Image 1 (cartoon, rainbow, N blue to C red):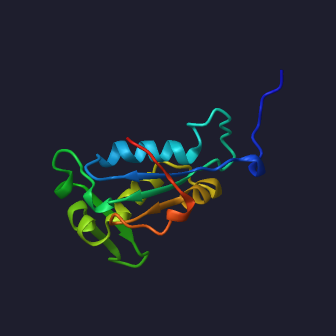
Image 2: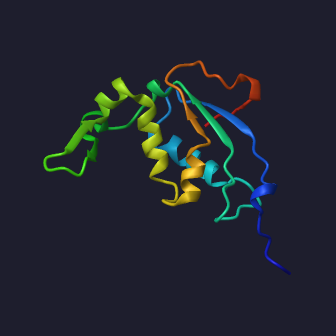
Length: 142
């Protein structure tokens, strides 16, 4: 018996919508990452982009446990001397709440071209409104 390998042109993609209101960041990110990898599908193939299109709404209403709002820090470095910037989770949620979910999911995906193409299928919106109503996304409860 031969092992089944999914071809990229045979992948069937579905649209899902997730309401992040009151959900815990890490638990939501793991579910999204496994859906983007395609691990929820029976024909999962690791080297093929099997991602479903995922729309996340109400990203500003995400929750974290413990003291992470003040203690968790995101760092970036420009490459220049003293070019390190640091921002905590509370400030990032106030300014760019979409980036919090995007960074959490990106860290759980492969760091290669397949992972980058999976991230393109993730759409995150701060409020309840999104421009993907024509695709009729299925609501997904987490």
